[in-house]
Length: 176
Ligand SMILES: CCCCCCCCCCCC(=O)SCCNC(=O)CCNC(=O)[C@H](O)C(C)(C)COP(=O)(O)OP(=O)(O)OC[C@H]1O[C@@H](n2cnc3c(N)ncnc32)[C@H](O)[C@@H]1OP(=O)(O)O
Image (cartoon, rainbow, N blue to C red; front, side, top):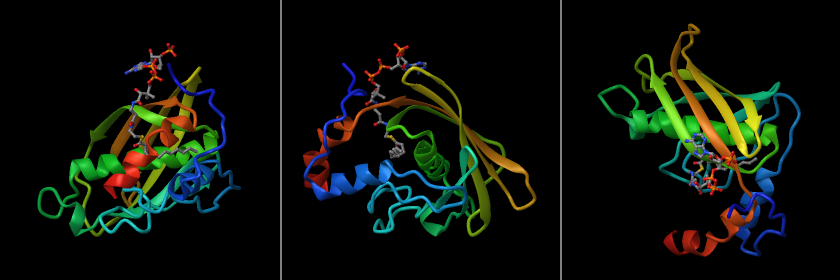
């Protein structure tokens, strides 16, 4: 049984409370959106292995400028495909602020159209395409500085309630 209708107060665990309160943020256009939490692999400022993605609201979607670095190398000089997927997945997590729902990735499909180069700035966009009940369809793209699309992603996110996260918080804490 899913927990999408569970609106009970969040855990007293501060790690999870911060996370869940930041998820409920709404923001005006072009405002910098908060990280999902400090240790998030995609956007957490405290995660030394992370991507430190920073995204802004842009209309009904989000936009980010992002540079992959040597920690994310696959082939020499080129970002690892898994690193690109991580950033796109996290960008969808930012788009959920605009959608205004807690949701998690059920399916993520990435198309790598051209190499994503290290130490090179890319512009990332994401938005929701449609919603059917708990199912959110989202799309993202990565553009180089000439506007060429080098990667796209289509995702299915499923709306969940806070309990999806709080019920697992002790496990997360124990592994940190
Ligand atoms: C502001 C907030 C920020 C939030 C930001 C959060 C941080 C962002 C980080 C980036 C995002 C992540 O990495 S999230 C982490 C990675 N993802 C996860 O850990 C999720 C693991 N998976 C799960 O926990 C579960 O599978 C759920 C919760 C996703 C779904 O389980 P469930 O609740 O039992 O739902 P289930 O019935 O299976 O499926 C729901 C509906 O989707 C349909 N469905 C399922 N799979 C598919 C499919 N491939 N294609 C079509 N449809 C499908 C089902 O038929 C059903 O339709 P119908 O019967 O309703 O019509």
